[in-house]
Image (cartoon, rainbow, N blue to C red; front, side, top):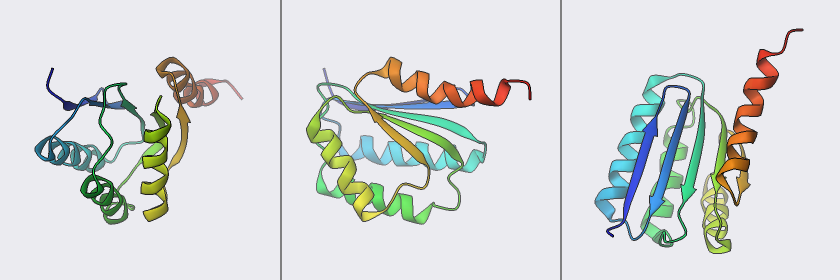
Amino acid sequence: MAGRIEVTNDGTLFVVRFIGAYTDADFDGYIDAMDAIAEEGSNKLGMLVTESNARLPSHRHVRRQAEWLQENRDRIMTRRTAFVLPSPIMRGALRVVFRLQPSPTEYKVFREEDEALRWLRSLEDVRSRPR
């Protein structure tokens, strides 16, 4: 199975899946998708998932991700971002990105998707409670 990066966006939650050995073109497509999500300007929740077979990001991809965060800091309207990173190596790669450019949003790292979704949705539960 070829590698790829899948991006889905339902209007309130966007999910990015890094699968296998994705290419530079796949990564550029991911950056384009993130540009489109940032352009929407709505207050979204985000989840980035690295599948167990995802390759370690290249230096170019880590640097490009940090540059994109810096360039788009004022456009990013994500309330929370959950990172589902079962691999310690991927968690280390995320730390490198955030050393180069700190996260512009509240975030938390998880090993399982269901935990990440519960955390993301907990913000909605708090907002929907009567005062």
